[in-house]
Image 1 (cartoon, chains in turn blue, purple, brown, red):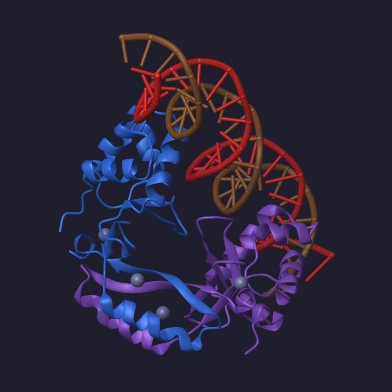
Image 2 (cartoon, rainbow over the protein chains, first blue to last red):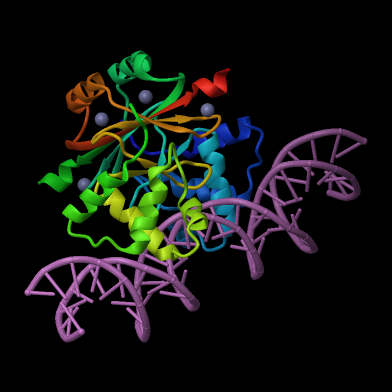
Length: 139
Length: 139
DNA sequence: CTACTGATTGAGACACAGTATCATGACAAC
DNA sequence: GTTGTCATGATACTGTGTCTCAATCAGTAG
Ligand SMILES: [Zn+2]
Ligand SMILES: [Zn+2]
Ligand SMILES: [Zn+2]
Ligand SMILES: [Zn+2]
């Protein structure tokens, strides 16, 4: 249950989608390989001096489109990007330290498919976030 | 099942919380009274010439804190504010026209209380959004 | 290897949402 | 009415991200 993103997975996914493997992208991928939990776009910018801001944002957007990253908004603080371990999944967010986790739960999926009774229209997707106090913030 | 916000409810809630009923706030409340679905802060600003931008944002934040409004982020487009009919609730968002709805479902609440097995940490809240094609966008 | 071509880049301007500052003005209690 | 405090609005500012565009690079075909 590693929470890391492997660079070879990124390279494969990006190449398969027909994108070029440029130096800037490789640099970003290498940095992401070591990332855990949520991080901001600006952290990437600061860590990579030689890569332009626009390129960092473009690459993050690319990885989101390919399903390798998620973007999480919140009322306070900047949006957080997180690596995607699973295809479809949900997030836990610590209300104390901001740490982001990821989980899957088939009972949630089953229930949400069944909720449609109340809803006007047809459900095509969903987003679920659990706010938690993480194990480190409790102790 | 009206989806409107009644001004008297706002006035009561705002006064009860110890806030003053100023002219600018009354103007904003009056405008919100007729609002349905999601709207942006800038729509409010445009509609209310005499009220300053900062005041609009301050008032929206106030109403969110008092539980009368919700703020919804999305990958594309500006954040949307919506009136809150119920205390705790969830939202439906039409992926085609952007219309925002609101619903409650006790089975969702029950399930999410029970999910804790998988989760590291203690759950203190949640957020659920259903993406839909609304009835108008289907026809 | 070389040339070609379109994808990609970086610098900087721009856009948008929202906040900070602060002198001025309005609310409400007395 | 007087008074203390909360709220306002004008404006500058921040943060996050996008647009523009000339220069460059990656991949490919010859
Ligand atoms: Zn924590
Ligand atoms: Zn799900
Ligand atoms: Zn619709
Ligand atoms: Zn709920």
